[in-house]
Amino acid sequence: MTDKVITAAALAIGDELLSGRTRDKNIGHLANALTQQGIDLKEVRIVADEQEDIVSALNALRSRYSYVFTSGGIGPTHDDITADAIAAAFGIGITHDPRAMALLAEHYSNLDMEFTTARKRMARIPDGADLIDNPVSVAPGFRVENVYVMAGVPSVFQAMLESVLPMLEGGAKMLSETVYCPHGEGTIGDHLGHIQKSHPETSIGSYPKYDGEKFYTNIVVRARNETKMLAAVSEVNMMLEKLNSE
Amino acid sequence: MTDKVITAAALAIGDELLSGRTRDKNIGHLANALTQQGIDLKEVRIVADEQEDIVSALNALRSRYSYVFTSGGIGPTHDDITADAIAAAFGIGITHDPRAMALLAEHYSNLDMEFTTARKRMARIPDGADLIDNPVSVAPGFRVENVYVMAGVPSVFQAMLESVLPMLEGGAKMLSETVYCPHGEGTIGDHLGHIQKSHPETSIGSYPKYDGEKFYTNIVVRARNETKMLAAVSEVNMMLEKLNSE
Image 1 (cartoon, rainbow over the protein chains, first blue to last red):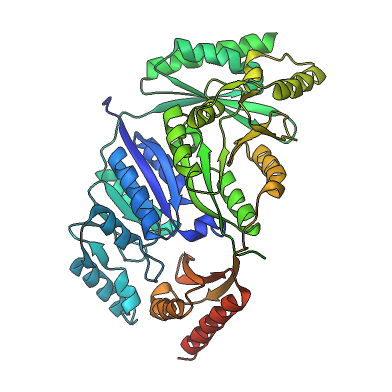
Image 2: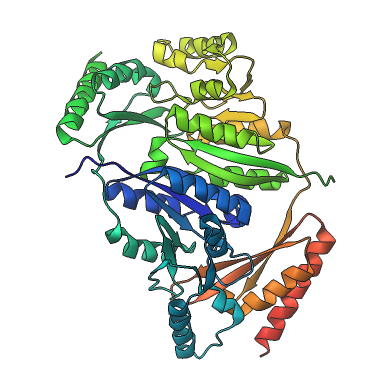
């Protein structure tokens, strides 16, 4: 086990996510997968299919975090501009990549479908990028330095992420334990603040839920060290026992 | 009808959104509500409960867009730091607001519950802010200049947004029409690119879907002018008829 902290950001790209037409399904999936691997997702951004917006978000994120994962905008139509925007962000060239062209040419030949100019757009890959395998629909994602560029269709995004995850450096895994609390946050807030202060190497979060009639709370204790986590959990449980007996 | 373009950004705040423990439900709801009101949601960010991250995201967004809507981090516990972060971002003071204190004092008195130090945290409001009504659980949101600060619990967020929406200036409403296309993007991409070029005042998006066996596509034509939108839709339909008869 390592104490190294590895951070990540997600950049979801697409007008449809901002108009409400499509609800993003990739961010939550990515968040879970990274947490399981001990990588801290620290920031998410969603931007439109506009080159300037993609470039400025990508450059802000890639300099700040260990990894950046993008979703969306690598299909065959005119509004799929992610690959060109990534190349612009890195200041590198972009061409129809021979490896991707070969993969796609074979795929459409097998399907007896025309390899149209539009479909060839999906082979546009920034110079020097590694390809990311797409077992669902062949057209590859790609990696440039610490940026992983993947599709927006959830089944394709998930398949690409599967092949990317084993290649990532995992950090010290963040452990967590959730304690159900029948009280609202107002009842426990003062106590919880004190427990947090006496357990500085844990992160104690409280997440209010509302069931339509009353508030209850999930108290989540997170730490990279199990002993320290359990010590804080034990104090949380003592607090709840005390409250319940009052 | 006005031609003015009103823009917005969303800032969702909370460690639990980034760990995957909680899936955000507010962004999609906000996106829909703003689209219906003719306001363009242009960017979304999700950041952790860390003051520096909240301040830097908020300052980037509030200078760039007409409105910023935040969700999360205004509850009674130590990890609810949004109100203080907003005050820091604007460089203004923050105190226990007398209006909010009165609302909450009455609420807890009615419930025969103690108005604890933790609950009083929910009355911390930046100087000069307007309050946003919370019909679900009383503790108010607030507005500072063009920034609307709301709760993260979806039922409370939605109720707060209801009271905010009528106060917003609506832009020229973006109209949209979706055309179902049985073909994948590769088949239509070239044609669609040409149609987009000849209808510059529309925005033609194509959204690939995968049903587990094959790709189909939703083609969405958006414009602020109905006549221009319908002209582009008609060309899209002609393209599909031609493809289907081939």
